[in-house]
Image (cartoon, rainbow over all chains, first blue to last red; front, side, top):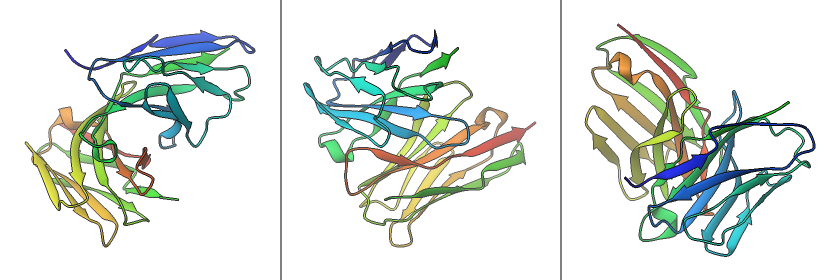
Amino acid sequence: DGGITQSPKYLFRKEGQNVTLSCEQNLNHDAMYWYRQDPGQGLRLIYYSQIVNDFQKGDIAEGYSVSREKKESFPLTVTSAQKNPTAFYLCASSSGSTFRTGELFFGEGSRLTVL
Amino acid sequence: KQEVTQIPAALSVPEGENLVLNCSFTDSAIYNLQWFRQDPGKGLTSLLLIQSSQREQTSGRLNASLDKSSGRSTLYIAASQPGDSATYLCAVRGNSGYALNFGKGTSLLVTP
């Protein structure tokens, strides 16, 4: 079945460590996104990518990095520079004939806890 | 900056009731609006997508309307069921066109 796969589902990290969250999609979507969700807050955009080898910072990119070497994959690295990394991370991709009007689909999320 | 507000923040209704969830946004120049459902600890599931040229969309017991001029959308759920219990999020794709701005959601509990 087509969809978005995020891994791992749960991740624990010690302070000072970098971690990478995986996001893979087989929907043949050009656009991919990373959002962060915290209790009591709406989703906030970290990074997005419209095409392979191109990505843009969202509203809260500091302390994060991404790559887009393949259309299907958009991994997110949470670096030690991120001050408050404990959160639920959601990957999404966008469909449609044009980038702006496409419907957004989400993965199941990755929960990162910093010990 | 586009601000998206959802009212109420939480709602509890008995099974069988029809209900309306509200979403308002500050910038009426939007490309589309999307309603999602989120179960605890899970990702978001797309329910309905309304393009800026449309007034409403329907899927089963769900109906979403869009009034761009007033900056409002409503999600109507008919004959609610306990399985409808979840958080419902509204998101707007605005002028920038690159990503959605989300509301904080309405937490719905449907009691048997």
